[in-house]
Length: 134
Image (cartoon, rainbow, N blue to C red; front, side):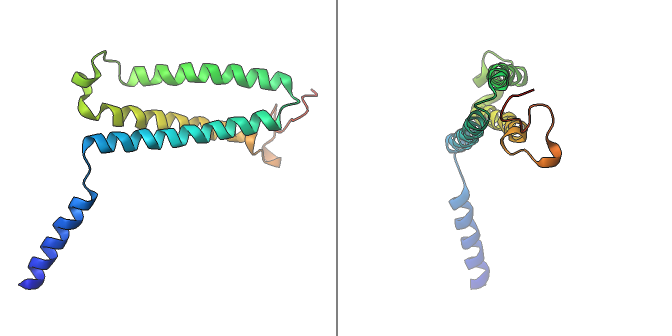
């Protein structure tokens, strides 16, 4: 009987260690998104450095990134279109919002990594063309 009581107390104690408030979960989602957003910045800067001599590509990359940001923001607005997010989605809206931003940003990182880390067999178009001599 003492073992059962001990196990129950231990189980409830462990559960309380991992329990989070909504604010904590929202903050964790924000921090997780910011980490991924920083990773995107690192990949983007690496591409700018590697392809610095390929000015046509760099100009196209910058235009693409500006449009991607508009696309990302429009996607999030499409996912959560309400003007009153607190009423429509509740207190977990920041968690949902930052989770979706993170998902979209991870997809963008995957796309840009084609240029950041080109593989010999995958080079086509501007991928791996550091000189810009077309």
